[in-house]
Image 1 (cartoon, rainbow, N blue to C red):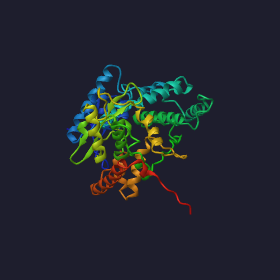
Image 2: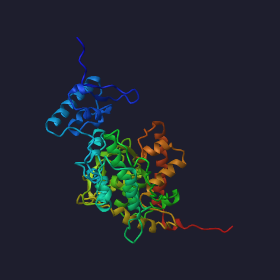
Image 3: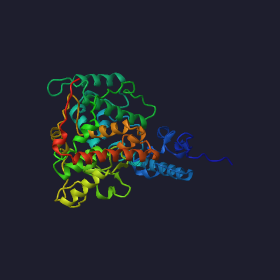
Image 4: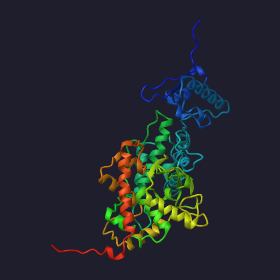
Length: 422
């Protein structure tokens, strides 16, 4: 008796050790559906089968494959088969799906990888779509039929569009952001339709000139901590968290007492405010969607203790007496005053609150601290912390902390600097 053909195969890739699935016509599914599920990753499973997206064993992969076949058959019976290639969807309809968490194809993918989709990102996409994409002739075309020339005409129309003040959009961050957004949406469509030609494939994303922030040298950073510069326990604690721990402002005001390890000592950065500048802000993971450790210098420790003595201990570390936390503009409004009180002149430099992170990174780099550790410390990448550099980093920050302590105890007359001419 001949052996019956299996309705699918689930080979394991040699490079990534992940499973793939190929559905055969013996499953009873239409040929077009089988074609769409040829050598596909389990991560492409629909949201209803999200629990099967990361099989660890061959048995788990086959269980997921059986579940997928049954799911697709059910959809066929309902008259809405799992046709990943949706020939009738228009460009506008497809792009609009990415402007809401509930409909975005990226939401399920990120969730399966333990990387929650940022509400701020979705809001940005919604703004791009509503203000600059919706209504363009490009959105009326079908995804399956759009050509490279159509995409280039859309880019051209977008580039000459006038912004407030009459300036063309080309060359702006908004223009670059829109092109990057549309390219991402088209890549997702191509991921679901492997044989489809992506008309944006050979159209490069514009580079974004974000404007480099300048770092404060050590002597100017120390002047920020002189007694007459920081006028309250809140200002001292926040400034120390910025310059000695490298925390972002959305991470500072989301910090909870249980994230402070007073014995090691260290700070575990696991929370940050999403949509921090808006009323719809929500508590979520930090940028990069990954926890990290940050230094917890004695200067910051003492500042937090003093803050809690004055305002009490609340849900968040940096809280007022009533338990509320400062708003998004709190640091921005005070940072300029700190510079003025410390007598620090920008002199053409771009010195902003985010410069605190650049300042810390520069100080550590000057002292020979591993760049890999600095990247991990600031949460810039997924590089693993190398433990042998931890001691040297903590010592460097302690040295800076001691100098800050000395600066805070200095009297005004001690800051007079005499200049000699050569």
